[in-house]
Length: 377
Image (cartoon, rainbow, N blue to C red; front, side):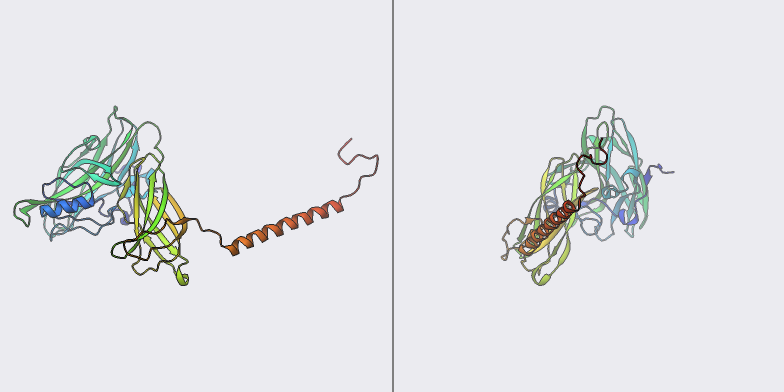
């Protein structure tokens, strides 16, 4: 029987998580850009599964199918936290031990041997980064799996239990790790000198400390439109993590009130921005290629887990490729017509109040001389 404090995620929430990273014995890169460069140099495969926080496409293990790993349960007190459906996100006191059930699955038409282990991760440069191979850190050393490897039949799956045992001496901090499922090729890669290793994992964000969970929050800074070198319009948004937990920023932007009363969107925020507590970064919103420059009214909603903020305003896209526009004007400014209408309404309301007050004064009964008003002696 599973722990009654845990619930099963919905089917839509239990797709493959994190990113499927291919490497050829070389250190895993610390960012998507570095990973692509390292992979190209090594002749390995870089693949990303559906449901990854980076919003990538389904990954493939060469031509033999894909492997995936997913959470089978989440804490009941985090049922309303979207991040907890994909990642291990929790706050515990020192000395706490808890478990999570996972499922490893394969779409390969051939049997697969999948190795399982925990390894170090960190947040650097607004990105969730992972260490090379089986590099350990504090959190990964606290994670044990009941199986070091599983032999999956063709298109098969297996369940694994992860136990996280936080020692009594653990200091107050948020820590990061990844639980990896890894498949190694039986033959050398295309260049003939290295074997290809593919792995997919579940991120772990564990905050340790006495008392309740620290607050999570963020602020939205400048919203700046631009056109990339290829002419495609996009919007960059500055974000600051003002809370005490890491954030994975996602969201959407909608445009309205454009030329000829056009509307567009919503456009999803490009995923992949992770901010450590106190960290700052930018998110990018790619827009439609054929959008005119505007001006546009915008509505931007950003969120991370349970925290969500919305900004509105007006922006104008630059005309030339490779150019930046002016920062958006926040809020919807009042037009002269609306301003005049508002002032007129206030004036009418004040005049009406004065008339009513004058009428009350004229209709108040007079008190005869020598007689106190009712209620007084």
